[in-house]
Length: 114
Image (tube, rainbow, N blue to C red; front, side, top):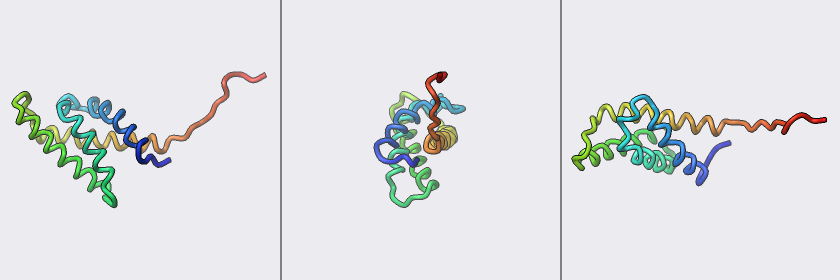
């Protein structure tokens, strides 16, 4: 089942922040997780873009998010470190979406039958 539209956005909105926060090094990308989620959602709307092109779009939003976060003076993020963790996190998010898309519902009985 290919997820599209609202269902896809709902899945990303709920799932992506949890996955991104929990990938190895996720604590280093916490300030830009909302930016990454928005970038993933934007990238999915790019008609005809390959997976690589979509990821490139998201990584550019990560760059912008790091610059904006650092400009506040409240945090000092290492751009290269954030990009490395974000890249792995994006792959994990998209992988999880593909797992959900490929999931098959198996109906079981509600207990023993007489």
